[in-house]
Length: 125
Image (cartoon, rainbow, N blue to C red; front, side):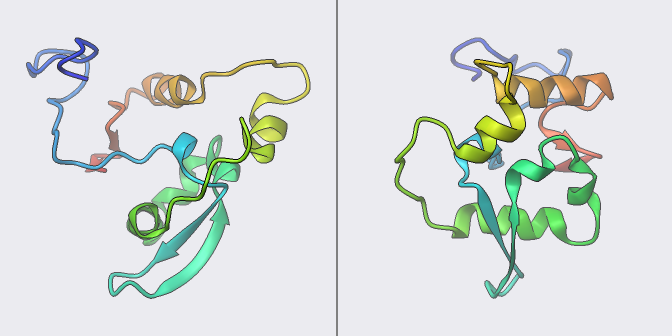
């Protein structure tokens, strides 16, 4: 993103300095149900990722952020067999919307509350 000029390398811009070594998690590239794992790699549970698009408070409870992050890189990639997942079409787009930039909507939600897009309550993720 720095190379393409989307974000600045300097710390005087809107968001904090971009750390290239931190993995980003985007629900737009995850399958519908994200598996969560404990620190030893033991499977704990699954949760429907699309349910938490508009209700991000779930992530800040307990160990949900680290468990979900572990799941995002432990969970194997599924093959793409549809243009858009059914849950995304029904729950995010709804009946009247023909298109939606979900990643941009996520960034916008964070900006409304004054959070830089690569931080959640001060926790790098």
